[in-house]
Length: 352
Image 1 (cartoon, rainbow, N blue to C red):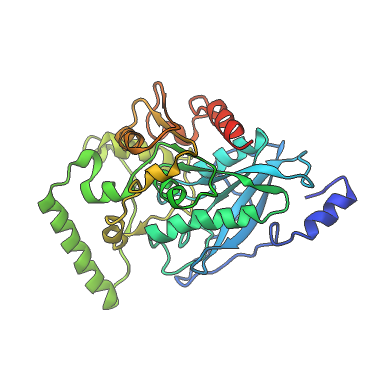
Image 2: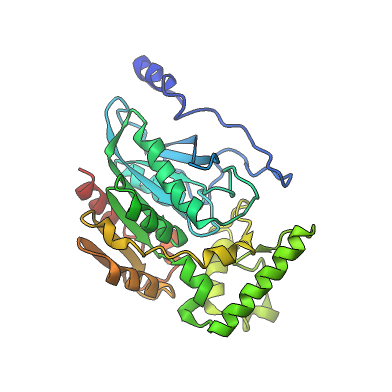
């Protein structure tokens, strides 16, 4: 990365904790999670600079992200920043990176990062889900961004996509440093694990699910390989197509095709489902007020009821923005449907 002005280059060297070199990390399961540099599922914008960064959460996990900013931005001034969270089980090279890059092209410094235990970020056991850690990771991202000399710590917003929508709402409820909060295609993962989509899981089925998770804990403690739940099947063929739900097909079309497939998307530990059931992300949502809350959802999204219910519990100022003719995954990457103008207006208005 070259800079025209020598003084700016010296300035960035002095802030090496932000733009430090990052080497591949082999985790305890023997896999190296870092791929060839800058491999992403979306095209790079030549007007935006992307730089690998790393920071740590409150639990000591090293978190790895991509910071984006306009290539011509004067980094000797302070700017507004937006932290972008990836879908549940996803990685920063997918939809969150796309959003971060696009918002950077509109004048923000942005950060898309991998939550702990997955992607390029550290933490063991690998592929663990910990709602408490995930929520703290967004506060850790604020810690990091707010201590960069070119970020105005009083103008930091957060944006969560899918499962991260619930995590950023929970984080913002208890962290007033997040000055503007937005979600896209939000999932309440606690409710989804407890009750299933459309609350279809009965109390008896829930008890059976918990019993199965408990049995798997016995097995893994006694040496069995961890069971990894991959929410999207690796293959849907003619023999299974008619027996596959429309929701699964929708996720498959994103995660298992060249549209959004990425090798760091590996699934999550099945035994994490039990603790995730104890996650209630909207318990303190009223504490976000008077900070603004924007919820964006597709008109045809199977997950729309999560945003509807959270919106009803939230206090003003709040807005539920419905995208016509869009489903859940359309808002992951379909740039003709994603309301980037709306997001730009929201963050520029509220991060003045």
